Length: 134
Length: 158
Image (cartoon, rainbow over the protein chains, first blue to last red):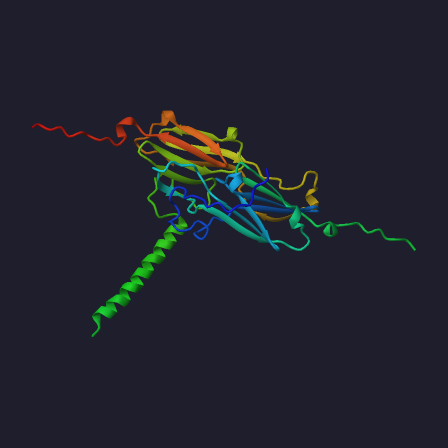
């Protein structure tokens, strides 16, 4: 379930993006749910049309970037007549705080939904401090 | 005195306005003619892309995170309907109490959905096929044999 980090060039789906390099052309902002609990942060992102082997999750310093091409597997003879999705790759970045352990991020992709679990660093987890009675 | 120069300036602004209009159109998703029964709604779930080839009409519904068995695709009187329900992801570690959770973003769609598309006259609704892959539902509606483009051979009398 671990998506690989790669830089494979994505192909153009459905001609809705007007040419150009998919990495620099318009990108889609995936919808996300972000929930924090005591152990860390869970990020759920909608990435329809993304294959696991083409999903790239990159951590650069404190910045987390999700990037992936959208591939529909349509026949090449297909002509677009109506399109609500008008770009061919997803991209979204998040700034992580220092209390999160970026080395232990766990990622899973199923049916076009990415679930990222970013645990808190050990020292940042809430602890109960006992008060001594003197 | 410099008519060519003045005209150029005017055209330049006209071009710019035209470009602006075009961008607005593209961003709002209202650029293409839509069927009276299936007017595009920006932000509706699932987003739809429709493509056509000589043989079929292909509809792509961007509906991630749904059990394929729970998606209902039906055709009635030339209207194709895609409906189902997506449950809100609990998005938390099992056992975490709701009081210990902070929700920072909740953008993903949750709930029941239904989208309809009016099929063209030449569609063959009896042979509709639907497949679900990587969160995208692909519906293929074949076109009638009679409406497919044909080559008509030209015979010679000589």
